[in-house]
Length: 464
Image (cartoon, rainbow, N blue to C red):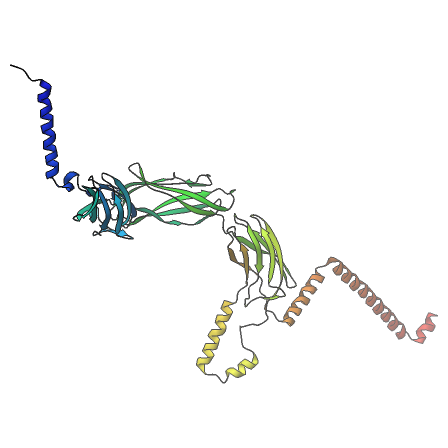
């Protein structure tokens, strides 16, 4: 018996298997020769949002089939707290089999949204494209797909520095610096640490460091953190930066900056150094810690004093510690409100009792308001460029005497001053002595003549 070669048997098996495969290819429709196109959202980033935030999301769109997809359209719908900003529809012209493409949408989370996971519904329509037997192109509309994007809304710490007071610091002066910290989130915050820093070391805290511990802030509440600070007295005026930080559990919730002004305004001292014949000289000194620019000294209009000539004097610049002297022709009016004149008396005889009482009250009020204080206004520009005005009150001697009384007073004063002069007193005494001697000599001669006239002629002969 003759044996057949083993290779012939194996060959027959291979041929039979190929025939089966060919038969299956003929039976199965051409569209089933590949995997249908399938559009899916493969990846989304980021997925974590906070209330009140508007953020761009990047979506990776994938064709999970072997056939190409064409005319792809994704429609995004809104959820309860998350909405799409701009167009809610995104189109892709084509996407090959097993290919991916990134698209971007912008979403906004409603302020006050509670923490949780929220889904954005998405619908997708597309056509499938492939080549059939005979290299014929076939386009098939696929059934719409529906899926959703899940986004996590976390309440995140929302802290703001809502107020800083004061906004200006005077060099060398202790100032209470206060920061208002506000929790604008929807849940309370615990165990916070607030600190500030001025890099140049011009502003430093006194009696404490620059760190404050805050144990609790309710949602929507504010807390004021205070420091006592001093700005270097020798520092230049200007704007300085404060670095502000709020930390919780070792992580920074806020890291921001704010500006504070060192310098600004100053103060003045005014005093009368000379006053004679209507000429009043005033000493104006810059007693603050900042320079003053374009200083002008004015005498405002006031009832008890009048200025003859110019009411303002331009000084220029005054550094801290400097002073200047300005002069004005200042007089006081002679009007007196203490009692009525004769004409007023005759007029009051025709007034009623109520009108008389009203006039008396008016005169009394005017007399009470009359003051011996001179009002002085100082206009200047501070170190920040702001024009300011400082008003000062200077005590003055108010004179309301009439011209005759003033003349009599001057004569009386002159006479008193003459009799106080020792030369004048000596001359008067010497003149009195001489006059007394002359009068005594004349009186003695007259007595001698009278005695000689009484002697008779007989007496004279007897004597002879």
